[in-house]
Image 1: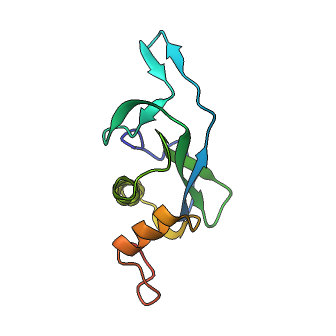
Image 2: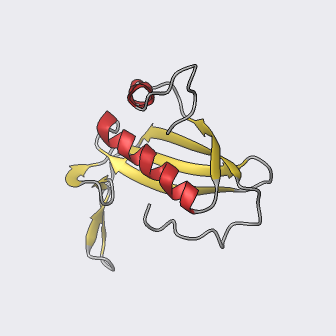
Length: 134
């Protein structure tokens, strides 16, 4: 998410936005990138973790305007299997910080009810009485 540093490419918009997080299965595929001298398709969580395992899942984080027709993916990660709860929690917390640094206010968070997502919500202390992430 370190590349999310400016909102200049986004159209003018009110600060309110949704932040969606979704994970999906991928077909494993490794390719060599000769320009960067690296293999693409391996598990990669950026600064958090990288391995030599062949990725078969992608986690994508996107923000979208509540008012106005704009949307912008802000991060994606490749993983071997679903993202672990502790790592997912860190990614969610980092994403909220990055979105706030852009001057956006993530009023709504959207993600499915997968077991890892539910575990992160529980670890973050979200309840019916306290419905917002910290």
